[in-house]
Picture 1 (cartoon, rainbow, N blue to C red):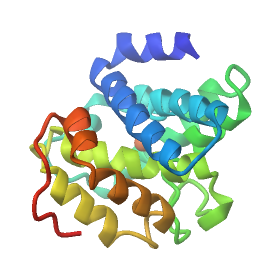
Picture 2: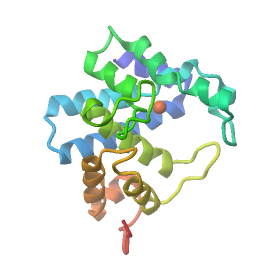
Picture 3: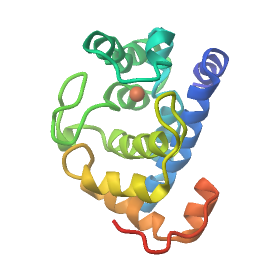
Length: 195
Ligand SMILES: [Fe+2]
């Protein structure tokens, strides 16, 4: 698995850093949800690699400062399957499956297969929340970083449609602890948070 992380670091250090942050978040959520340590370890490994398929997507799309057009979306949507094809056979199947399913949605409208609810591996449902949370709170080509409070509100807004409600509940619960938020994001306590 390390060799894929090294590949990602060499090709796209920002994507590797996103994978690391997402892994830390996902592990905290998984711990809160009482997953066994070996599952948490595999989840963290999967988080590091989840977007590795993006190394096959054109830079023009990845760095585009505005919204993508239909053809660009179509290309971007191939990255979970490409990542899966790249790592399968070289990493545990559970890890490869998380790479494949990290853009499925709880309501079954995600991609690549439109698999709903509990048919998405729990590890992937946890990763989806951590991934979106990190994407919102980090700077992106088309958007500055947004506050933790905003990210949490988005998680709650999409609970039951995009995200598994039990995972949203876990991250909201974690964020209620000021020390966790400070260690994850280097920001002070969330007084008056509206979630
Ligand atoms: Fe992705």
